[in-house]
Length: 234
Image 1 (cartoon, rainbow, N blue to C red):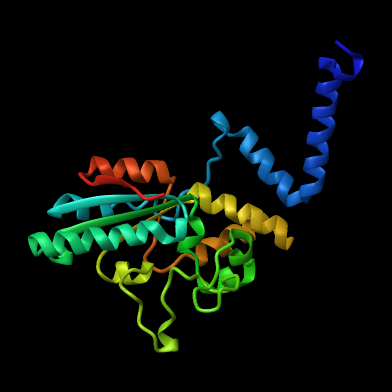
Image 2 (image 1 turned 60 degrees about the vertical axis):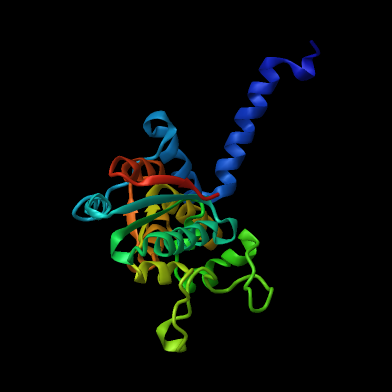
């Protein structure tokens, strides 16, 4: 083995590289990395919302006649919302089911967390450009959340297949807090703002009615335990 490729040299290179990475992220980024390293099993732990994690949504599943959970780990052009709409249409056509008889749960986690964030944050963080998501009306990088209807002030009602349109029909929308906080950490580094401030911005930017959960995997499993059929949507 050559001296150039020796284990000792590789170890030193990794240490130097890791130190440089911490320095490059700045104080906010370094704090985020250290927090994750200190967490058991490498999974960071964040404080729950005031009042604790809301699990009342599980009661709605248990009471419903038709139940399904749509797992969205990637945006995939809003496939989870399309699948949820098709599911509801199918049960209405075949069984004449009403919205009230159906418990439709959508879980947004991992790389799909931006779906549940406001138009204002999409513009500020330039999600359309970073995620390569275009505005269907202009084909340019989206400056608004394309998975939401226009605001009431625009005078355009939410379309049935969009997130807020589904929520208006009673759909339960859950989001992964781990993914939300990770995205906030990335935003903090990019915008040079304190991590705690970025986290609060992301929490405040959730679409009204979205329920924050400890993580997305838990959300999917808990919905299944309440009786919802799992439907992969990415």
